[in-house]
Length: 548
Image (cartoon, rainbow, N blue to C red; front, top):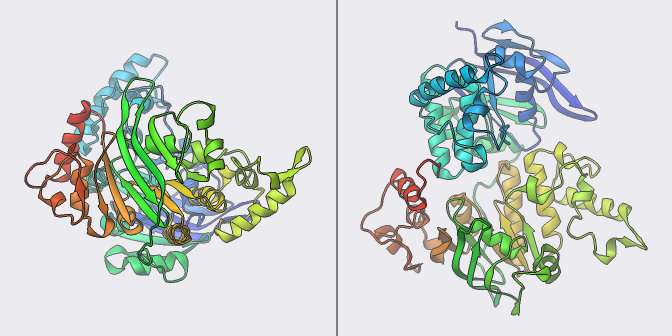
């Protein structure tokens, strides 16, 4: 029999009192896509970081191609033919694509020959695997889909036969994820071995050959993907049956809490990001805002959350909100009764070196209940954080642990807990379950629904259409800074919404009962496929080099 590409035997790893991996054994066959799933904090990323040399295992053995291999660092992993694409990309943002690809793999002191060689090989790799990206583009100027291609190119340039991807679709739109799967399929066809760490069961079922399930640092099962179901995998991950759909009663909306009229935003480069946006969110309902990333949803949340100035009219409970000046900041918004879960938890929601209890009070630290004379009541804040962590099932429930030491999903829970715990009149929530496992998704969705049922207004932004359609009571679709259409969630279709997300109309959008289609939509007969939508989006933006 052919030796497996990877075999791990008895791998264990602890970080102080936390046992991240416990006696794990796994076998990955050559030329396959092998999924690893589990809840946030289950130990998936730790296990693969050991394989890539980021961590040293406390016990266990690693075999690559049947040979026992010592991997003390990432250079040894690269030498063994292993490449890894991390959830948070390891790219130098002000370097070009070409410079990032050769960084650490230069052929000598003179860069020109290395750059010329890399340019030739990049073209060959792009042609072979569909990894088209401009070698001279600067990282900070390209989208996350393109940045991910650069990470894959880096690994292939170093001649990786084994490619590890950690939550690769956590920051991608559905079209970008589909393109990634096509690339992974080509890599598998060429004999590459791929390990895919993800929490998304749809992706596991669609792309993998086999899947291993981890729970609380242990390997619970390895099965052939074709011989299992999403429900079985979810139960193996969480240890109980999981509801794979949102369970909610019909909304009972009341008076508008948020009213937005003719809101516009122009960025520092003079580009108009929002164009006369008008919408309202009523008490006791969830308004979902759908759209391809970069079409104004982020800017809308930032204006409403006090992070960016705007022009127009915004009222909260009938009272106007300042859109510029000192009264338009996040502190004023929180005082008015607005909670905000930002889209990027690491850059905007947390201060990563600070502890969980410190992060649990950021933005609310001037609340009188946390004051102890001239000082802050740190003991009281820590005790409250402990209660929050237990209520929201943050793992480990240690308020003294730095935010950077939690998994991405548990970081998200810390932010969600902080904002929901304040019982806001209006909750702004961006990408609520990005990088979050199935059990935590179910829990976060339940908390959002509970807030709605308590009579609060919720404005939800997500690139996951399934999430928008299942959570929302009403949906609005944005394209190029405008509202293209809006209506009840239960009469929307993914195809019709996809057309509106591309600035298109047609039969599918007109068939969405009860929906109003904006005059800004381009009405055309028939429904284009997703590649046509992407091409038209790129053409409208005037930049076909960027991934949509």
